[in-house]
Length: 299
Ligand SMILES: *[C@@H]1O[C@H](CO)[C@@H](O)[C@H](O)[C@H]1NC(C)=O
Ligand SMILES: *[C@@H]1O[C@H](CO)[C@@H](O)[C@H](O)[C@H]1NC(C)=O
Ligand SMILES: *[C@@H]1O[C@H](CO)[C@@H](O)[C@H](O)[C@H]1NC(C)=O
Ligand SMILES: *[C@@H]1O[C@H](CO)[C@@H](O)[C@H](O)[C@H]1NC(C)=O
Ligand SMILES: *[C@@H]1O[C@H](CO)[C@@H](O)[C@H](O)[C@H]1NC(C)=O
Ligand SMILES: *[C@@H]1O[C@H](CO)[C@@H](O)[C@H](O)[C@H]1NC(C)=O
Ligand SMILES: *[C@@H]1O[C@H](CO)[C@@H](O)[C@H](O)[C@H]1NC(C)=O
Ligand SMILES: *[C@@H]1O[C@H](CO)[C@@H](O)[C@H](O)[C@H]1NC(C)=O
Image (cartoon, rainbow, N blue to C red):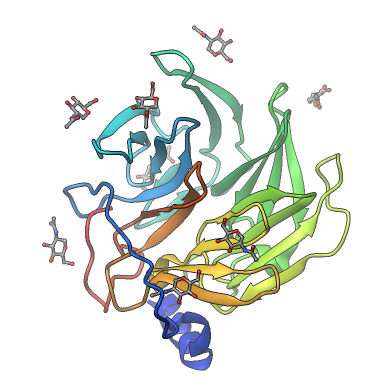
């Protein structure tokens, strides 16, 4: 696929960004849970107050919970109906006009699932973050915009449009531009996959941009990421099968995984444990860009 050729080219040009640096520190990776079938795809990940992991599937419209402690057990929390969360196929990608945002209240024994908003103008909703108590921001990887969704009314509008960093690269066969999104200290941070950047833009209290876009780092294929309290980003690279650390200065180091191993095959998203000592990474098992050309594994 063309995308992998572009990625290989970039890797050849800037090997320092992607190659693991020689070091004595060993960042061990452990599999907490793995499905038994190839074709499974974990897309996003969050950590509950009590430490359990919530994770969404992309191959089926499902929300799962995984206890990372001794049981290492996974259970299905909810299957979303039909195509309402967004009709997405790994082969044909997204169906515009099929998206909606849901909330799943887990405070009672039975999950309470309700719809926040239908977002028919969206082409491919992907990253999601709370901006303030009443407003969500969501990335649209195909349209190349960031949407603002008002939770009480369900109204939505475009919060940021910056074709240079949000739209997918013109020569990319897969329309995957802006991807992950986080809100931190009056800034909206986002990753943009085929533009190969991690960027940020200041936002005012009306959830609107109040200054220019700043590129923090680039030269890798970011999927989703997490931000530590000090502004350090940990970025899943999906096609590069790795987890990168991007310091606020723009310095990039590889934390774990690499192009040639299945340790983090198709890393899609990252979350920090509640004690801040462990990074959890979800994977797609290398389906987007198989390891060494043909190796995939279950998510
Ligand atoms: C967190 O709470 C959920 C719901 O009560 C429970 O299923 C899960 O096992 C808990 N996780 C941990 C790590 O205690
Ligand atoms: C895992 O969770 C499932 C569903 O909640 C339950 O049926 C099963 O007994 C659990 N297995 C273990 C080893 O805890
Ligand atoms: C969802 O996508 C599949 C595969 O591309 C397609 O067959 C189906 O018609 C789509 N459904 C809707 C409602 O868009
Ligand atoms: C479920 O959530 C909806 C939306 O927040 C709320 O209106 C409803 O009362 C909740 N139902 C229960 C049983 O808690
Ligand atoms: C939502 O949109 C409707 C229709 O455009 C408008 O009347 C209403 O004031 C909006 N509500 C908010 C909270 O923006
Ligand atoms: C930022 O926070 C991360 C995660 O807690 C930590 O590993 C890293 O060393 C911190 N960086 C600095 C410069 O303090
Ligand atoms: C562990 O992660 C740090 C960045 O946090 C990196 O400098 C180091 O090279 C990594 N070690 C390995 C073995 O990947
Ligand atoms: C997944 O696919 C790989 C080939 O990429 C194959 O070697 C492996 O046996 C498959 N695993 C399962 C569980 O089917």
